[in-house]
Each structure stands twice: as C-alpha cells, then as structure tokens.
Amino acid sequence: MTAPDQLIATTPVNDRVNLLGLTRQQLETFFIDLGEKRFRAQQVMKWIHHRGVRDFADMTDLSQSLRTRLDEIAEITPPAIAEQHDSQDGTRKWAIAVDGGSLVEAVLIPEGDRATLCVSSQVGCSLDCTFCSTGKQGFQRDLTAAEIIGQVWLAINSYDAWQSGKGRVVTNVVMMGMGEPLLNFDNVVSAMSLMCDDLAYGLSKRKVTLSTSGVVPNLDRLAEWADVSLAVSLHAPNDALRDQIVPINRKYPIERLLASAKAYLNAQTDKKRVVTIEYTLLAGVNDSVEQARELAALLKDYPCKINLIPFNDFPNSGYQRPSGNAVSRFWQVLTDAGFVVTVRTTRGDDIDAACGQLVGEVVDRTRRAERHRAGRGDQTLLESG
Ligand code: SAH
Ligand code: SF4
Image (spheres, helix red, strand yellow):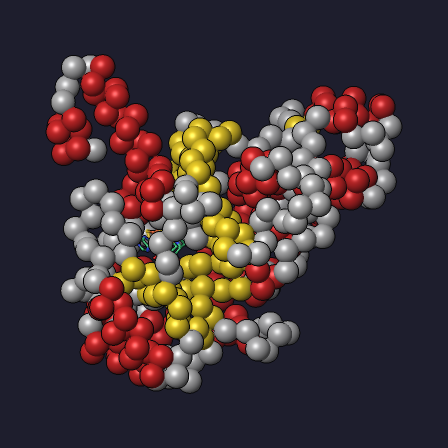
C-alpha cells in the first residue's frame, strides 16, 4: 500500500515533526532530507511501533549526534488518554483527548484469539446520519495521521505488551469509530499504511477495514491508495428511506455507491474478496420482513456479506432497538436468500462501548458537573445539551 507523500511538505520548518504518523516513505524522505541514510527510517519505525519507545535517547542503534538532532526537531507524541474503562467481558474503551481539548474514542474488543480495535478518524462527523450520536455532535475536525495510528499505539501500550511474546494485543482494526474515514482521506490512508506495514503493526490488509457511509468520489479513488477490506453502511433497501436516515444518499444514491464499492473490489488482486454491507436495525424504520426481502433483491448477485447491527441507543436518539425476534426474522429472510449474514453482538454494554457513546457520556458528565458547580439542575442541561 502506498500513501500520499504530503505530510513532510506541509510541516512548518520550525515545528517539531511528530514521527508517529509518518509512513515508511515519508520517514525515509525525512531522514534523506536530514542527510541521513534511508535505513534510519526502518530503525526508528521499529523503535516507535514495535517497542513503543518515545524517547530518542533510548534508540541505541542511532548515533549520539543523530539522537540529539532528533530531540531538537522531532517528537513521538501519541494523543493522551482521558479515560480508560474495562468491561466485564474484556472490552476496553478509551476516551482520547486530542489537541484542542476534544475527545474521540477507541474500543478494543477481544473475541477468542482475535482482538479488534475500533478506531476514530474525525472529531465528530458532518454527515448527520439520523441514528448516530457522532453525527449529532456535528463536525469539529479531522484527526491527524498520528492521532489515528496513535490509537493503535495507545491500545498496545495500555497492556504494556510491546514485543511481549504474549501474542498480539490488536489483530484487526476497523475504521468504525467516530467520523467518516473517506472525508479524511490522506490521513486515513497514511494511518492504514502503517497498520499494514511490517515495520509498524504488520496487519494483513484483510484485517484492516474501512467503513464508509458512501462518499462516492473518494471511494472511487481509494483503490489507487489502499487495498484494505471495505464495509459500506447501507441501512436501507431503497433510496427513499436511505435519503431520510443517511443524508449523503441524496448526493450519491445506492446504485452509484454499490457500483463504486464493486469497482474497488474489482481493482484488488485478490478476487475472492467481498464488501461487508452494514445494516443498523432501527425498530419500525428499516427492520420489517418486507424490507429484508427488498434488501435481498437489491443485493442479489452482489459480492457481499451482510452485518446486521441492532441499534445502540443513546439519550434523545428518537430510535429504538428492535426486539430479538425482529432481528431473527430479518436475519432469516436474508439467510434463506443465500446471504452470509452476521449479527453484531453488543459488547461492553456496561461501559457504553457502542459507537460514540462513551464520549457522549463523558461530555454529559463533565457538563453536568459544571452545571452543578454553577448551581443549575441536571434537567436544564439535558434539555440544552
Ligand atoms: N462513518 C463511517 C464509520 C463510522 S460508523 C460509517 O458510517 O460507515 C460505524 C458503523 O456504526 C456504521 O455502519 C454506522 O452507521 C453504525 N452506527 C452508527 N451509530 C449507530 C448506532 N447508534 N447504533 C448502531 N450502529 C450505529
Ligand atoms: Fe458520520 Fe458514520 Fe455517524 Fe453517519 S454513521 S454520522 S457517516 S460517523
């Protein structure tokens, strides 16, 4: 996988460069510009991503003078952990403080010998899907490549499992946290390149998944830059409904989205790959048997598997999770039609581990505390916040 080679060029000369977010190619350019050999990049990447070392003084295979120079012009700075929560089922979740005081979240979900890290790509999101708590926050800013890959770094660091020999802390990454990854294209591509690079996290491209709600022009060019797995957030079997709940559909309707996702697959060398179709089930909105049949007809002969996600509720969402029976009926129609269908089990319920929930909870709690100090009641806060 390649990555856009723009970070170095846009980094002001006097600023310390954060080496955490630089791809192999970018780090090589950095060292060549310093008059150093290209292989310094490989040495430094191993220190950062294999051993979790942040202090240049500890990089013992670099000359003393290079270590001193790096100390002057560069840094290795992951974002800070604001809160860490452990669920009884082994799920671990972080609220991560990024520059500017905002919070994003990452969740690590262990399952047998796999552990999937759900990573955020933006602070908030501009796309405003009606059932998404991140969408309700609006968009604040893109995360940098360092802030995105920093979530992987922090997850491993939190277990103190650098080269521990205990097996990998993170075996899979899904870009399914806060934000729309295709609207932060360059930084997401750089971070995914590091996820797959043997000198960094060495994950197979099949084990890194980008999820999009359908930013079609950027999906059209993704294959030039990345070959990771693709998930498409469909959530409706027709444009009339999708226009309502996933507003970007009004710009790029279902037919264009599915065609673009198929073209992405076709550009890959591995011809056995399929698109994961994500479908969040909202009671009384998109969960009927008729809608399941319509979805089966829409996706007939389409190279996909389907992941049903029972809605995760949050305060004032206006939606409800369907009953277990409704989920089963929907699943049955699709399975009978020959699709491979999984239902996402909710993990980490006791720590609000579903999309956008922990940050929402931390923000609410902080605001409540502030209101309390200012002598105002919680009710006012909940109405206005
Ligand atoms: N922006 C990207 C990736 C982040 S959201 C996207 O939309 O694909 C990851 C997945 O969680 C998406 O399929 C999204 O629609 C779904 N999702 C968002 N809020 C949810 C909620 N409250 N309950 C269940 N699924 C939700
Ligand atoms: Fe953004 Fe995805 Fe949430 Fe839609 S579901 S608002 S695209 S984060």
